[in-house]
Image (cartoon, rainbow, N blue to C red):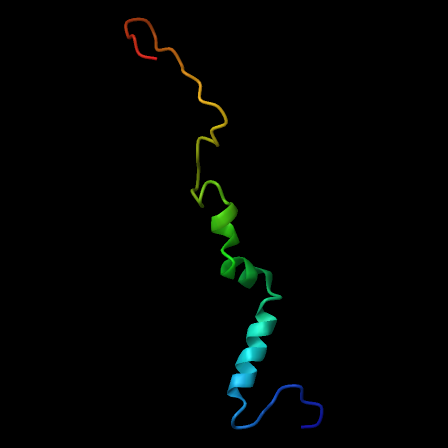
Length: 69
């Protein structure tokens, strides 16, 4: 096994786990999941639809017989 980059011994488990953890951070999906970027920056929180993001509240007058604003 010349040229093997990974340790292959009986007691190599900790080293292999550490190595795998280190390289998983280069995977974009893993990084977004671990840092919870979707929850942090999604204003609709994953809702399938919404009326929109409220920028300004506007009072809409109701029609004739009602007096509500």
